[in-house]
Length: 331
Image (cartoon, rainbow, N blue to C red):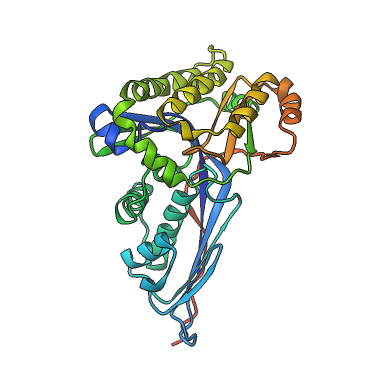
């Protein structure tokens, strides 16, 4: 039995420039961090005496005789890619899917990591990110950028640079004291609105060609955000204002990134004291990230009464195996 834990990610700025259609010509950059909210993938070999050959448990339970019969496209593709049969796979998570925290990519990375351990293989974080990108973007043909798989595989706060057909992960060298100050100014709320991110991602991808200048400005903000975070002499509140500017730019690319309901919530939070923020992920709902100075937390919480406030901490490990035990030989 293997249990792999993979963190969810929180993207600050740069989203959209990680689409292949953009960065292969203009280069891309994103700044993100992982947080201590996780998905867990458990994989073990299924004893031979069951009438089915594999069992997968997520929001549904599927018992099949062949990976080809599995309805879940990501699980089906991953099992076929790595020739995994006669297994029991279980997925659990701290937060709901389709919420803007890279949950699908965290699942993909964690599942691939667990499969490798079941095969007696150790692979590095770069290979896991690359395999998850291939699985989601090429094999399953899901629209979207490439930042999520990389962020959750590596973990920590990073600037990820994209160029040509390659990427580079650059840890953000922020002092521990300033990181604590930043954490005390970030609030995370679940809006409760469902969303189909792939549809939003498809429309965003289709509009890249007509939004080049906006995306170039979003890309520029990544270096500015890193400078604010790492320069102890710079007012950290500038980071909140930058989030606000970046969110307004992101909405220029695709209006469906937001909704009327989310706009009302965001403006209500700003009137209560939030300096900035954004919807995480493709948009349309899910989690709302806000930058709020500590003395205004109470007012913002009151302004968003009824929404779930989700505490979190930064994490640095990325995907990792947290339990391993050999399966008993039942042959």
